[in-house]
Length: 106
Image (cartoon, rainbow, N blue to C red):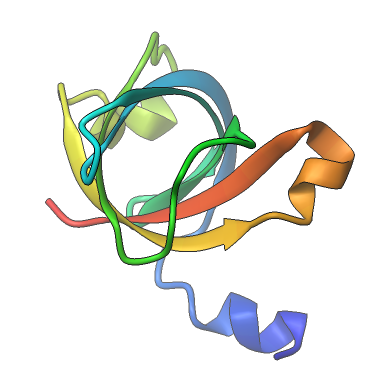
């Protein structure tokens, strides 16, 4: 799939957002340290530790920390439910973290 097709599938524009996220992995109930990379009204891309046992299709809940940007007011609610839609293990080479894409479900 080329980059143009991938971009065309998005309903909401992603915007850069660097903020901590309290991420709770649904299958294990464990809280994982995470850092948001970008977000939209439909989902977010986060970096999580490389040893996190995350897979597409798994549910997560997440709370964004210290949101002071009015563009992301919709994320300031206490907790969001989401599903993992992508795990990019190639990102590990660049950042030492996994890139995890989630789609919001609430």
